[in-house]
Structures are given as C-alpha cells and as structure tokens.
Length: 429
Image (cartoon, rainbow, N blue to C red; front, side, top):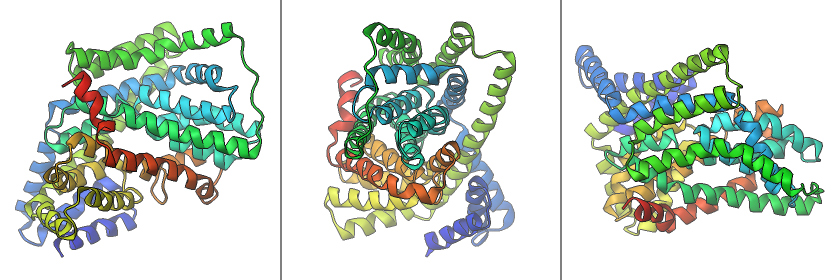
C-alpha cells in the first residue's frame, strides 16, 4: 500500500503535465507529509537531494555532455556517414545499414541517443526516402539504432547506474557495454538486410578503393575519441572523470581547429545547451535520490525481494519478471530517473541470486533503451518523428520487428553473463 500510494501521487502529477523531476520531488515530499510535519519532511528531502549530487563521479557527466555537444555541432556526423556509406553502401539494404552504423558510431562518440537521432536522422532519412524506403521505416531504424550509443561508452547513463548501484566500477561498466551495444547494432542490421531483400531495394554502386580509404581516413580522428577515452581509463592514465575533461579538449581541438566547424558564436550556444542539459540531469538525480531513500526507508526493496523470491528462486525466472517490469516502466518513465529509482530496488534481488552487478546494469540499461523508442513517453521516438516529419502511430508497425530484434539481444544478455563480463574481466580484472 505504501508504494501504491507513492506511485499514485507520482503518476497523478505526471498526468497533470508536471515535469518528471518535479513530479518525483513533489510526490516524495507529499508522501513524507503523511507521516511527519512539513519542516522535517522538507528538510529531509533537501538533505537527500544534496547528498544525491554530492559525488565526485558525477563531475564526469557535464564533461561528457559538453564533448557530445561539440561533436554534434562539429561536422562529425557527415564524416561518419560518409565512412559508413563507403563500407556498407553497396550491400543489400545498404542505406539502412549505413543508418544503423552511423547512429552507432555517432552515439558512441557523443554519448547521446537524442543527438544521434537528430544529427544522423536529419541526413539519412531523406536519403532513404529517395531510395524507396518509407519515412516510417527510415525513422524507426534511426530511433532503434540511436540507443546503441547509450551502451557503448562514453555513456552518462552508465555513470548514473554506477552511482545508483553504490559502488560498481565505472571503468568496468564502460567495458561491459561494448559487446551488448554491438550485438544490438548487428541484430538491427540483420533485420535491415532481410527487409531490403524482401522489398527488392536496389543496392548502391561499389565505390573505388581510393574513395573508401579517403572517407575512412576522414572519420578516424572522430573515432579516435573512443580509443583515447577507453585507453586512458583502462591503462590507469586517468579516471573516468578526467577522461571527460580530456574528451572535451580533444573534441574542441577536432571541431574548432581541425574541421573548423565550431566558431565562438556556436561554442557559446554549445555551452548554453550543455548547462541546460546538465542542470536537468543533476536535478533528476537529486530528486530521484530522495525518492530512492524514501523507498529504502519504507523497506520496499526488501519487501519486493521477498515477494519475488516467493514466486520463484530460479534466477532466470526472476530476471524475466524484472525485465517485464522494466519494459513497462520504460514505456512511461525517462531512463535517468528509472535507473536511479529502480536500481536500489532490483539490484539487491539480482545480487542475492548470484547475478553480477555488471550484467544486471547492462541488462537494465538495454531494457530501458527499448523504452526510449516506445510510446507514450519515448523521447527518441518523438525526435525521430520530428526529423522524418511523420506521426508516431505510423511508426508502430515498422518498429515492431525492431523491438523484437532488441528484445532478443536483451534476453541473450540476461541469460549469458559473459556478454557483459568478458571484456571487464579480460582488460580490467
């Protein structure tokens, strides 16, 4: 009844169009009013919000947001698209494959699924429409492929999970996301090839090897950011937070000095956007931390653990139930508050069943990535609709097989731990 009352408050505020961060904070505050007076309740919420953002690891988030914004505005997208076109354009479903690969690479570099959807989709969707693909299918491929950037580091959501989990290594999480992220991209590509062959789309002409090498060479400086960040973290040269600062410096040198596509006026706009995004993320973290404390104080995680273990003690069955719950949550809640609120609830259950926190974290984030392109609250779905000038209801049918592809990978990651744990154990034991 406790959690039901709290959830009713939360969803009532969402129904009244209250922004999600305020809905979380207000529902927490109103819930505390039922048991304590106003002043102690307000003081407790303020203290827990402050403690929630009082973390050195969180300093990496504004750095990675800033580097992602610079990359998004610095001419990176078109070079990655040219590289992907040179490598995959002549294959069956070439443009769809180029879309997936471009979104994957750009998402990994920028760390933002929304930025990948906007930057890649604004170019690839019109190109796919000219080649005979429907706007709905093109937009659906862009939306699904953009989520891979949240699994492949540098990724802010992986940092947030590390904090919410209470001690999982950010470096290990960064490594753990590579194989699942690439598996999602591969699954989407397989479907695109099958779809293109069934529809009989023509393939592009194969480019001369000199042109291919030229486009690949132009993309290497952008792709080098991934190797610089991960190489420095794995070798111990710098921490994930310091890696964020290095990423900003490298992105700025690349975009302003090498590509010359970011001037002072554009850099001012980038800083403004970074401040806005950082403020939103940190306020979400603060309010979600207060709500997580209330849930813990009310013994909700322990009660839920007992309930699920009463249903079954089979780890696979419990993971299946958790996945179903998260899929439902992801359809109605943004990823950041979902990770902050439900990690403290579900992670202890997983750990008690012998499931590695790395595996559980990647499973959870992959699950919530599906929610980003699921109505009614899927942020990427709305951006993709705006880019392609289509409606959400028209995208639902072409999205279904893409959902299936992503869910298959989700089940693989849930069942087989080495998909998440192999690279961390190999490179950062």
